[in-house]
Image (cartoon, rainbow, N blue to C red; front, side, top):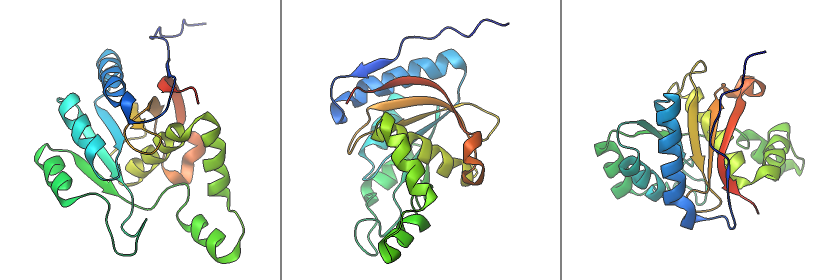
Length: 192
């Protein structure tokens, strides 16, 4: 039986949140270089985390995944125009799409009061932390958008609320094949 690839130990943060962002970006940069990973998927709402990632991860292909327009307020896009321009200038590709684990299912729950399979999957992933759920979800969304391939490993960076506190090495899948997605490594995550 072949020996498993050796990797650095998982880093566990005492608290979730944006104070971990710089360390998450550094861990992702280092591990991507070690594994030869070219694409890094980053969750971002207003764009601040993706702007920081673009600077810290120069030389990698950064894919920023945002909320849909209307996620918080009708007809509003949370990614600021200023941050969108900064990301585009840095060559970051931006995916704005419905949540892979809560788009239509959320509408059914709101209208009919019943939970759908996608939301059950999302809640199950949250057992490992909000960032883990988001990292899986943004990878599905980036794959569906054609910006991530299913035959190449990626690193996904996400967080709990603002900033980043979770990084995973993943083998992507499209949403319609989500059970083919594999979490290969947990680089870091909050203990809480």
